[in-house]
Length: 320
Figure 1 (cartoon, rainbow, N blue to C red):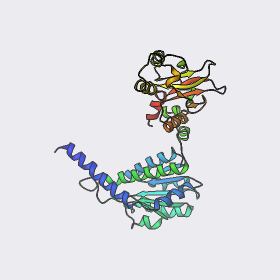
Figure 2: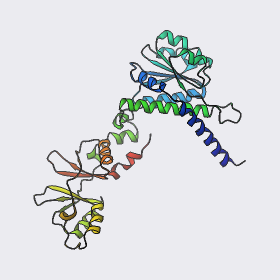
Figure 3: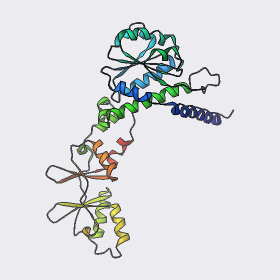
Figure 4: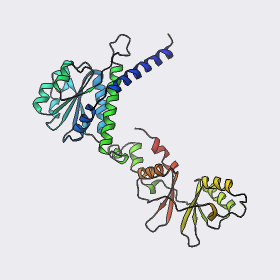
């Protein structure tokens, strides 16, 4: 057997099932998101077996993105762990069949506690679906397992639905990178997210004057290796910026470069940021203006540093 081909077939089968499931998503997701968003307690996710493992991951993702959540194994819930659940909580029960005894057995106790119930199931006609107020459909027509026994496509569908729920709630809360850092203070990502501009900026600012000749501008830009230089007037006030792009445009625009001065081809003004701003704010400003450097300006309007995209490029690509 060619396992390369077989692996690709499995990928395509699961992708196809996810696409069909995506087409079935309706307004119920809006109701679920709003219910969880308004929750005064926490979201408790319950499951067993492989769907329980998926439920644990969903709960972890939610908790790290602003939605208070815990996972409880449904089997353990019947032996004391139900004590972790209060009437202000929401219980999200995960069962592909909707008939798992461990899940069904905890429905009545949960109702007695008084918490709201949501199901994530592949069977909309199951006993579980009939017992809850809201249902998220994760039903697939066929497992990738050739025997149809091992949960494969169904657990993938549950995982993706959990990701969709997590991201929708993030966006509903207006959750930002600095909020994420609050819940991840020990990791590299968390440390980066709470870093300030002054912690990462270059303090040796490239500098030329309005009267600086073209060849000397190129030397300063190349020497400082930031792809730019600030332009100052005779009063030592920064009045503009010259970037690699400005240099290229000058070469195309002017036939005579020998006597060209910085004032002839600089960009007047410049984008700036304060030293105490977060790197996340700098990144947003760079993205908004489609630039790769920011001038760091203090309260006295002095340029005290340059922040380059290369200072934060690792932060931008970090995952946790």
